[in-house]
Image (cartoon, rainbow, N blue to C red; front, side, top):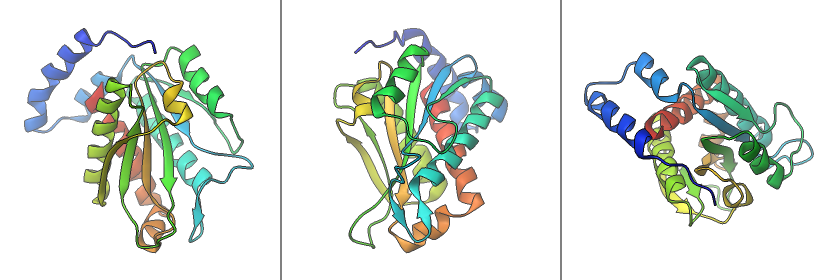
Length: 209
């Protein structure tokens, strides 16, 4: 896979790291994503509902969060590539190709989880085993989401998902929570959670970039 040269970018992250101890203003966060091209992938869509449970359809939840994330990123000066901008299905390889063809600097795929055991809960984030920078992105997203949601931290994991395998830039797949868990589903149905999720993904991207 083609990977970017992150030497200069790392210097910028270091320069901002001092501010993290005293609180980073929204304006400072803006500067860190301004000029970046970020692909946001809302999973599923159209005939593919994704996970369902307790009145939730994954495809609707993750598109709503993706759209809100897009607004935050664009307000901060980032260019955003949306792999879908409505309720329709996009093939997995096409999602990665949109990011590749658009020259994205990072790729975030947004999903929700399901389990046969209704007690299972929490947030987890994946990256491809060969994508070390994707691992860094996944770690920043995971940390931001767990802090924002107060959810069970299921950690950063590796997987051979198509969108991760076929993306030429650092890529991560975020699982917001479990639609099969009553408490998490009830929370994810709310407008407040969806704003929190968008903000968490935005802040995770800020930390990474």
